[in-house]
Image (spheres, rainbow, N blue to C red):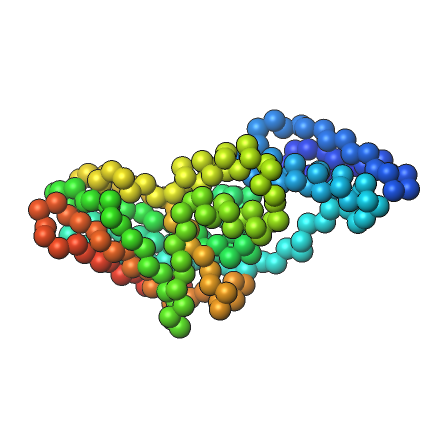
Length: 232
């Protein structure tokens, strides 16, 4: 019996009693870190289950969260800030090959464009995200977001190489705040938040308030907080 892995591979299974032989034919060598990690984990899980005469590896039933744009933008002192929570399942699969919402991770895409005459400093930038009921969505560093994915998919830490690759990939996609944003420069990146247990992660999120704290313009004494209401 053969089946497609959905990513350019074919998995062939030959079964006899409790014994099962698995042959993986790689038809496409280029994979994302998470694709390779999940494929490896699936194969290891099937092998363990087969050895114990247990049930074969099964992917959890997929649940589609509510889709739709959830964003806002504003301009302050020549700095345009745009934020959009990515809640569409297809977009999440395209970016991460994983449904982050099911893992209780909310991904927010930030776009910063400096149309002013001076630079903007993000070194001390802090994020605060809350819903209409005051529930706080904790900010996650990219590595912590990967850790939550591991927990959700119940992947053990022995796959060290793939985890390091995945962490580096999340870091690359994350918003870079080390360097000042120069006049005329535009910067985009992702920010990760943990969806609190009190919030139904499959319900249509709305009315989220995102605060970007401790923005600093050189020559200006006080730091500034910008507030964005993410709504449909």
